[in-house]
Length: 264
Length: 97
Image (cartoon, rainbow over all chains, first blue to last red):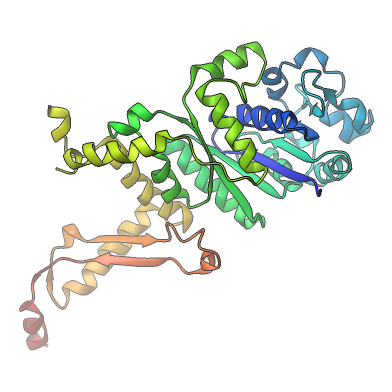
């Protein structure tokens, strides 16, 4: 199988790029894939902490690029999931330490050994973003149903299009069905209508995400709403058709009922 | 009960604001420039008929075009809704000339 390079991006910070990277990567590894997660946020690394691998970092991405170590030496193997590796980013350097060309080279090297390479993109649209998208051929755009996050996602989609991306999928994070029902939050359909890219996952707002981050263990596949939602995203990344969780049906009913009043 | 009779849900407000915001983001056209276009359109049309210049609505629309494959190179369209107050004014304008 040709390996896939997926960048997880959003524009705005704090919408769940790192959480999505960690869960999608872990989920793919659970399906038996060989997965390499790369943290491209130089200077503000976090993927190692979310994955619970922060104590095992010896070398990082900048060391690889500068030739201080071989690619293999910088990869941390996740002992809980065979086939899952993390390339951490440097904490004491800044974005200018790596160029897009160097990223492409590292990724080309990794493609030989992995089915999936997942790049956790930094917030913003500066050099860190350019580095992260340089070697990728597919993108997951993460957003929340908030005006600011959607605006930034739209900007990012425009930039990805300008950079020749053909496959971009939307992950809608932190959806609260109770608020959607009473007309105080945009629904998945509303967001898809605005951003006009295919939806690959709806992650309900779930306190278990915070708990799993505290523990340093991604919750994909666990018996909780977000865990199940991420498991579905993973299946869809693999190209399988999985129906969206059934709360979608109850929305349309409720919005219809309450919508009558809101229109008045 | 008051909740049910609220005029606009905050979700609807968000959607309406985003629609305008993203249009100006996408075509790189600031709201100020849209305002200038609007006043110029009003000026031109009011030469010929009596219009409600206060309530002209203009918008550039590209929303939703993106995923229809091949449609992405479609040009964005500018729509203007101009309320006409008095159509007979049109003849006056011509007569004055």
